[in-house]
Each structure stands twice: as C-alpha cells, then as structure tokens.
Amino acid sequence: MNSRKRRGYAAAAATGASLALVLTACSGGDNDGGSEASASTDCAAYEQYGDLSGKEVSVYTSIVDPESKQQTDSYKPFEECTGATIKYEGSREFEAQLPVRLQAGNAPDIAYIPQPGFLKSIVADYPDVVVPAPQAVQDNAKEYYTQSWIDYGSVDGTLYATPLGANVKSFVWYSPSAFEENGYEIPKTWDDLMTLTDKIAADHPEAKPWCAGIESGDATGWPATDWLEDVVLRTAGPEVYDQWVNHEIPFNDPQILSALQTVGGILKNDKYVNGGLGDVKTIATTPWNEAANGIPDGTCYLHRAANFYQANWDPDLKVAEDGDVYAFYLPGKTEDDKPLLGGGEFVTAFADRPEVAAFQAFLSSPEWANEKAKVTGQGWFSANSGLDPSLLQNPLDKLSFDLLTDDSYTFRFDGSDQMPGAVGADAFWKQMTAWIGEDQSDEKTLDNIEAAWPAS
Image (cartoon, rainbow, N blue to C red; front, side):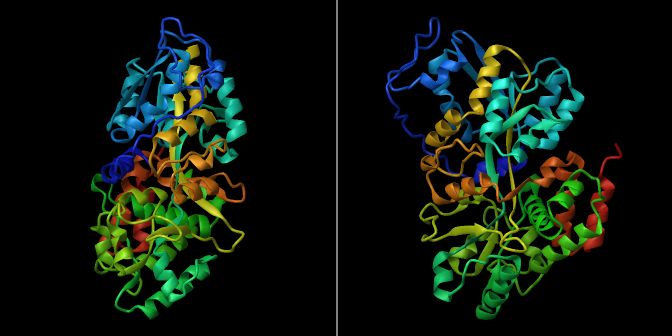
C-alpha cells in the first residue's frame, strides 16, 4: 500500500491503543550521557548495538498520525537501552519530497520507502547516497524473512532494505453467521468461489453476492488494481505477473486481457454486484472503506479487500471466525496453487554511521517486531518470522502473519506499487475507474495503460 493508499487507510482507521510495556528487569549497562534504561526494560538483546549515548538518527516516512505514535513508541526500548535518540518525521508529501531532499544533500538517515519500484528508482538516481544494508541487517534478513521479501528490498542483487510492516490483500470478507445459516462453505478453489457466487445469487435475488467500491479521493481506482493483480496471479501465474509488472510483456498482453475479463465476470456482472449499493457503475463512486457495509446488513455476502479493511468495520462488530465478520483466503486455481498478494514498507539507509546501522538492524529484528505488536491495537503485523504470534491481538492479524511466513504460499508485492508512477499511481488507477464507471472496454482500458508506460 503506497502512501496515498495509506492516507485513505489512516483516515478511516481508529487509533490503536498503546499498551503498557511489561518486560523483565533491566540487565543493560549504564548509558553515560544518554537516557538511562528504565527498570522495566530488558536491555540484554540491545547490548549488540553498543553504547550510542548522545547519538541521533533521523527517520523520514509517509507514516503519519495516528500510526506515527505507535512507531515512535516502538523505538523506546532501543533509545532507553542504547542512549540514542530517534528523530521521527512523518510527511504526507514523502514521495515527492524524498528525491528533493536527496538532490539537495539533505538526506534523512533512514527512510521508510513504501514501494519496491520507488526504491529501485532511488538507487538508480542516487547510487552514491543509498547505503547497502550492513551485515547485521543482511543476517537478520536471511534468518527472518522469506526470499521474496529479500528480493523486493534488493536492487541488482544488493540488499538495501528490509520490510517494516506488511499487509495481505488476498482476502474475501464475509459473515460467518450468514454462511452458517445458508450452509455455505469456505471455497477452496477459484471454481468453488464462482460456484458459491452463483448459489448466493440464486438463493438471495433480493441481495447480491458481491459488494465493491473503488472511490478513494485522488487515489480512486486503486482497489480495482488489486483485483486485477490478484487475478493475474491466479490465471497467468507468478512468472507472468513478474513479467507484466516489469514491463517485459506489454500491459495489454493477451494473458492480462484474459485476467481482466475474469475480473469483469464478477465486477461488471449485474447479477453479482453491487449488493446494497446499486448497479455496476456505483462501484466507481462508492468509498472503498464503506463498500462492505452490506455484509453485516445482509445485502451482500462477499467483499474482496486486504487485512487492513478491518479498521473500517463498526467497532461493535466482532472480527473473528465465529464473529460478525471475518475473511478467508482468496483461493487459487487449485488447493495447491497459493498465490498471495500483499504490500509493505522498506527500511532504507542514507548514512553509514554506526548508530544508523544499529537502528536499521533493530528494525529488522524480532525485538522491534514484537515491540511494535505490543504498542499497536490491531491491523498491524510483520513478515518477520521472529514475531511472536501471541502478541498479535486479533485473529485476522494472526492469519495474515501465518500466510506471509508460510513458504507454501507464493508471495508477490502489489503490482501498481512496483510500476512507474505514471502507470501504477496514475493511468492504472484512472483507466480501471473508467472501465467500471464508464463501461470502457477491456481492450481500450489496457491499451490506454500500456500507452502511459514511460519510454525509458
């Protein structure tokens, strides 16, 4: 999820309650000249970073309130145990301003880059400014992250960045009680999903199987891009997906056209959408964070959306397998075919001072992931396999973490976030909106996006 998508999420999300840090007694040494570790903080795991008293590390990111407080709270043990100070700056203009700062020689020590494509462009444009990951970060990456995540943080075989947070997009939201009442089962394959869709349409002509919405202010259209990306993974496979994202095949390749037609078989089918909201065209004007309200209302039964959609449910609704709403994995062609679409941010350094390397290593460690889980209410998890799942505070976060760290699933990063900005955050969004709202043809939609791809 890039920073513009994040703003839509943050605006809809409730602030997660910060939890008290209940840790064992401090075992670290004194921090002369710095803040001394409190008696409630166990500093044993932080001794590897050394005494950083009086040192400061600046962090620049697109993560703003309310999530920024959860970020800064998660750094407190590092600050207390090492004596370092973390200077945090969140900006809604991050993507525009980071290159400006790099060009002006005013680089932050650390930046959280929300797209692998942006990371690649930064490395290409400022090769003498971006610092390859230090050995401690490389070691953590090998131990705690799958190869896919390492690859997304690498450019030309060099690791520059490790993931911060993560999200899973391959989910379908539903009502467990509605499924139980109607005898519906969680689909295990794509064909099962379509059979279920047809059964819901037949059983409930007054409602619709699916509900959807792609309106998101200046980012309108991004939920539709997720639909296509998920389906490309399922119909064409991960290798073709990679070729498509990297423009090794054209955007309007026949395999992508076939995937868009599959998406249209749901989203542009009046028998299937738009439960409780209107006809197909209402998808283009329905706010993405309100689109699934028909599930608890009984006017729709299925809604494809990421794990972070949980922040948009009424607080009185229980998100659980036996609750009011929950989500199941969007199935592949077969039970053994397990593509997984997701996203996240990447920790990138622009200074090679010891304190910067230490903080970057901390952010790639289980200690940080666990600390972040403690201070976040819900809707956050990491791809770090060292994260203690018992710290995740709701079942969907735990399920998302399990999927991300399960090697039997084939993970791919959000495609639009990897593409050039003129495509992924402009033409792709706009043309998918026209495809829905104006009933623009499949061919014209893909041709227009292909025409927007930069020549070099």
